[in-house]
Image (cartoon, rainbow, N blue to C red; front, side, top):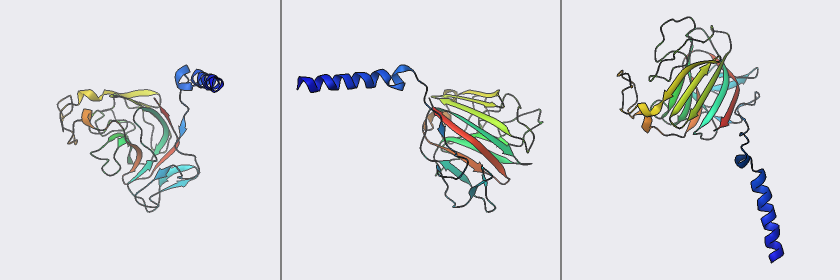
Length: 218
């Protein structure tokens, strides 16, 4: 019996000593898109999104949203996106696929290149809540890199290595109202929205393309 206890002690010691979470090793990236198919994704409208030439894009019979499998709370998301002329799209997070407009957050994807005055619906915006602080998006037809870091109430967004959003969701304390006094669409104050949910891509009328989608839990 004592021998078995000693062996168990050695096994547990080795496990805890080499455990990545205990030795400070950073979590590995999760490849949400493998560049081949939609194995890690789901969509309400079958065939609304497809993979063409290694890219996720709306099909010829497009539809709504496509969602990465699983729920996420705190994470760093990296992806590349390309818009068409006049494109309107978005990256959703902590969202409820059954009600993403009211039950989640969106980083706006839009053909905003060249605009000098940016609003809460322009590329990089925390949709309807906070305008991007800079316009770093490239012209339609060129690839952009999007980085989103969500940790607790903190949301930080970079487009092409330029920080455009640095938000504290705890400041959104009143339904339908932003901290600057302007109105928003949310029936629930942003600080009270769920802190865990789905990650999704939106189709909203014009072609858009995504690739190199990776996520790292924080």
